[in-house]
Image (cartoon, rainbow, N blue to C red; front, top):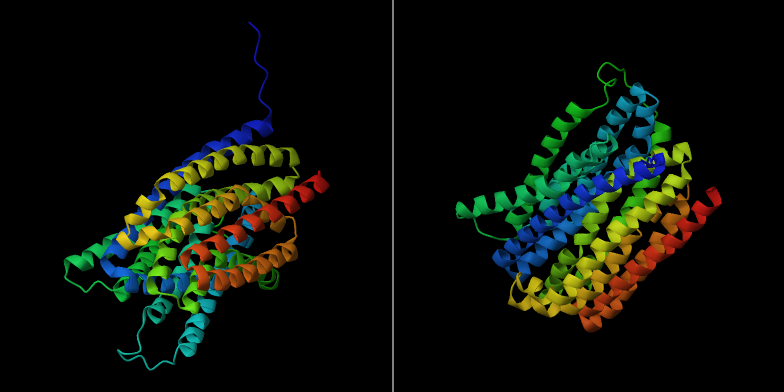
Length: 432
């Protein structure tokens, strides 16, 4: 009998990455469905005005949280796999301490700055607002995101994904329903409180997992800290993460700034929630691929990089195309679940979903460029995209409401992703 040729190591490793990615996609799908249910429950119980206030407050909290992370979680996925491979446990433990203290300090500064900019610290009952209440949870929101990324860096992708995709939104829903059972008034303040307390639960669980799954040599290691080097790189990764994450939320904040009717903003927020499904798929799978990409680039395994990119394209492309078709066919029904007045956001939903699908397909391109040292190129591209998105949202949103803002969102997302894809392809060719 003719023996089958042994599979090449690069192909076998890439197929293993694909299998794990499928599981992560499953977690992302479950997380999105859960988040979708949370949004529907909140929208139907809060009404358009309170749902608008909640959506804007959480967008601001998420944006501030991304900034206060200071890129420590993103940079962890670049260096912790390398430290583990080289058994440099003192540096790994030192980076844990450096990240926790840096993020906590930045968050406290963020709270002070946010309170000062929104009217000072005399917090009587009349001065509380959903946005100000959200600031209270800023340290927890930043730390839970960093902790989940540390789990990814420690090669625990399932645990890291479950925290952000399942535990936090699931706890939000359970807390909101529990408060409803206690006859608490359903308003935006209650919804923001539930969101913040859910982040507390997610952070506590993440800390338990990190203690359990930290590298075997870290327990007895004496931490060694390289603050100047780590801070310099982390700030770069922070700027890149901030400008990348601000784009979905930037449109919502721009829509709120031009002050169309509350229902137009609520429709746009609902469309953003649905179209964000593939962004969750991108986030969950990218955070698994990033530590692997770090090792690939350290070992200069460019053939494996190409195989991984092709297999990821098939996987993520199929999911994105399926979701886009589903939105085109059933988008109005999906929006109708938020309430009868939300169905008019169908056009915006289609534009936004098309843009997020293209962005998800090519989402590893900017990560590759960052790891290749092209930080300024990535930052400049994101900044130009953010400016363009803001201008188009203001111009088209003020004239055409949610539909105009949705077109601006989809166009800028797709165009930015294609630019990154071209730049990454050129960089990979030059490395090879």
